[in-house]
Image 1 (cartoon, one colour):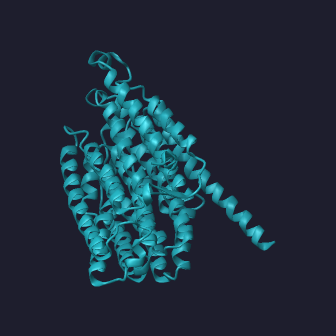
Image 2 (cartoon, rainbow, N blue to C red; image 1 turned 90 degrees about the horizontal axis):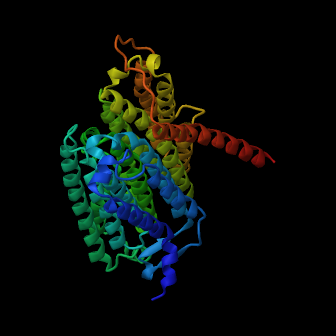
Image 3 (tube, helix red, strand yellow; image 1 turned 60 degrees about the horizontal axis):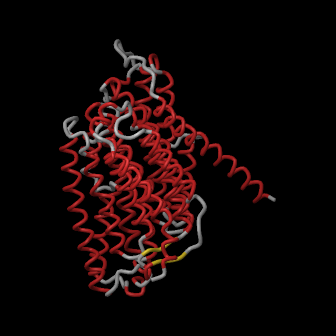
Length: 479
């Protein structure tokens, strides 16, 4: 066996090393040390520092290649995607600090970090899979620990119920996906991504196999009509877990879906584009209409996430290199804006226990900085210039438009007006709506401040970078 193949797996190996370090440190601490230590079972800076180290070590892409007979494939784009997921995980660790200091979660702090990194490792394997068996193993590695995370607050806020709903729906969707893979194997005799296109001929059985496969992936990305679990799970799960589920899990699944559609189902491009066309319209429109009716902010963000998943599909549907680049950029911008909003929601929930939109009335009077950061995040999610969300939507719309989906882009543009309306409802509550008893003024902990600063930097910095890039590109083209 050629052990140099493991060099292609440097991201996975470094993440496994972090997992082992945290696991060993956690189990070596006694119960008395856990009770006496101010910061719980683990220093909160340790996972952050380790993940920063993993990201920096692996930031430079390598050369494309494959390992273990094609089971594992590596491309430079995968390094970029994994780095984006790492950045999101670091921000989640920072915003989780205050929640993990509660007496009921302090003793489980090590479990939280290990479960989060286990899901991330599963996403790594999904992204680099070159065989459907490897892909499915990664999918389950990402899904099962996520169910434990959703039920982490099992005695609070219907967390146990949300965990049960998530695992049951995940199992059912995985069964559908696995049934579709069995049909693919039955009609082709292989599950290797590189070998499958020669055996795909769009027969009725293969079309049915694709429908089952897409249904399973639609659950992971929260696409309509596979979205019905999303609002209940987002509401019941701890807010920190909800933020991770809405961004990191969704971003990795969207990238993997696009990769498989381009690599494996290329001969069926007309069929899967038709399916994506109607699913994208339904996801954007239905989610926007239901978001208007929500009063609970976590349910509101759930329908916002479903709508954003529809926009992400605009990058997938063309199956082009521009679509791939737009998708990765969109996920990066969405990560900054969505985690910024969830950081504000999480810290306010920790301090006041309030998650209703009406509770944010008059927030600007008592907590102007949080209100301002929430506004930046919502404006970016809505796609208002000059924030990064405007450019991410612009690039992803251009990718779909250049692929010939003009009507689809027009419908998506109309829906951005609807989304702007319901995002502005929260801004109106914070700045305009009167409140006799607004949320009391408070100071955030340092870790939350860092997470908010990183999200703000992403929202503004990526927007400025996009303006500079467009300006340079325009002058270069003119020359």
